[in-house]
Image (cartoon, rainbow, N blue to C red; front, side, top):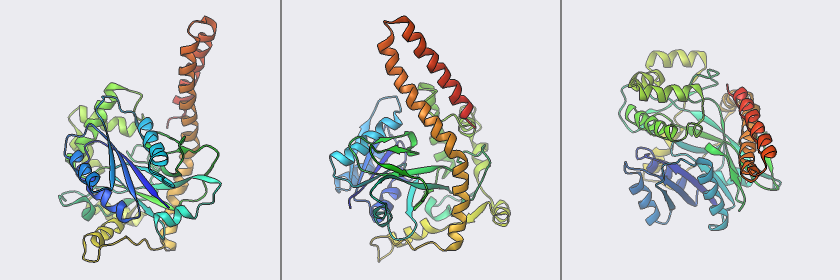
Length: 355
């Protein structure tokens, strides 16, 4: 099996080296990366991996942020130009962790009629006053948080069989492989997510998000917490926002007692092996019953969000089709009016779906 990972990055110098090192030790054969206007050293790190033959880098300098389009392009290239069997589309702050065996083993076990398999996003939180490498300090993970005001709620990510006509949704929360089914009842991968790692990185993250939103207000998810983070950056109060995300010792003790936080050292331990004298491919032990029970809670929350998210994506696809139809219908007044009415109905339905 040939496994290809795609990455869409911008100014991720603090994490990109760790990401590539981890996944290449976890069984990834090649990384396809789209570098969107990085200026912080990310491009130089990617270039090193490209020179070593581990990556192929595409560079985008346009202002627009075309998330789904660029992810789809890389996923199709993996199939048509690099003979991939499976592809997963990641962000720089994600570490894909198979639940026993290896990435190739769990994907190889998927029955042939299925083309898309799910992984669960599991979020790690920053700790105050710790300036060391995030892998060594961020060992606290959220568990089953229903607070929709938190910036990083339960979601899924997907891996898919390589296909020249695959379509990857923005953020890689879904993919569509012609002729194959979506396997929704099994979650063989956890996606360890480290979205906020330091105040400096938090400022950079939402500076970029603010710039993207200013160019295309509809181009980013309109979740209240994301909008609030961007407003904090634009209003000069991002430091307070970052402090609200950190977990101090008292909050950690309370979270452990309530079951809303967990200690999770897997990534730290994996890097101890990568850095150590033995090196070599990473090993992923089979999870125990306690691990399974914890994952079930997160999966249950994912299910609560799944239906509206899927409907919203269908509305988005319909909007794109209507936009194309509207162009062709302009010479015919009545048809164009119908198209515009359908677009308005679609936007209304989409607003009703948002939490």
